[in-house]
Image 1 (cartoon, protein in one colour):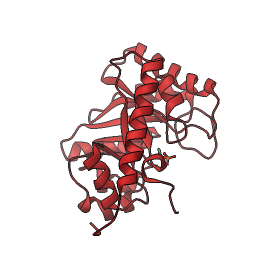
Image 2: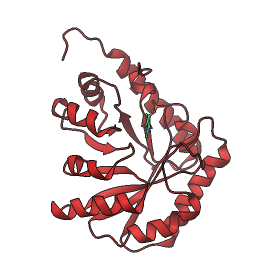
Image 3: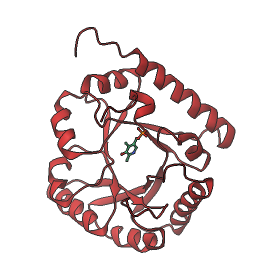
Length: 232
Ligand SMILES: *Cc1c(COP(=O)(O)O)cnc(C)c1O
């Protein structure tokens, strides 16, 4: 760690996020419902990430394989690591041993690839299925009308386990889109599909996590609200 670096703003940001989460849960959700906070680390130096972990963050979100590989040795190992960026098939082997949850499974093909590598290492890899609920061409994710069939197909793979859904919402999404995502999640949950364990709805980032919690999110992914605006 660079001596004298003052990260107290990260602690203040974290406390503000916790306060907002608690307030939103109290307003819209059952009091025993928990919301997990994932600290999104893209472009953030490992010492700042470790400071966040010392404040109580216990899950970090990684977007890019290269960046993760260059930083992972410096990370405090106390935190779980989630992969949240678009994952290319040829990169799966570099991360399969370390990642607790791959949130960004956006095709049957990548699920099969993860399954193959997980099988080799004797692992059952937890995954979320990424949904492009806003139907944006620029975003990855399964389209809502393909979701059930995709989940059914991936559920037949032995070395991956579906734990829920993830989405990256359009900027300034209307509440109808949040609601649409909540409904997709509940619909799949109520299907009671074999070999899946629907528990996680990963929705909401720095600008919209309170609305996401209102619509059932139990996992928010925050970068800039925690670490400050990204420089690049
Ligand atoms: C960057 C990123 C986030 C966090 O974005 P902020 O707006 O900085 O909170 C969340 N999820 C994914 C997939 C991201 O790439």
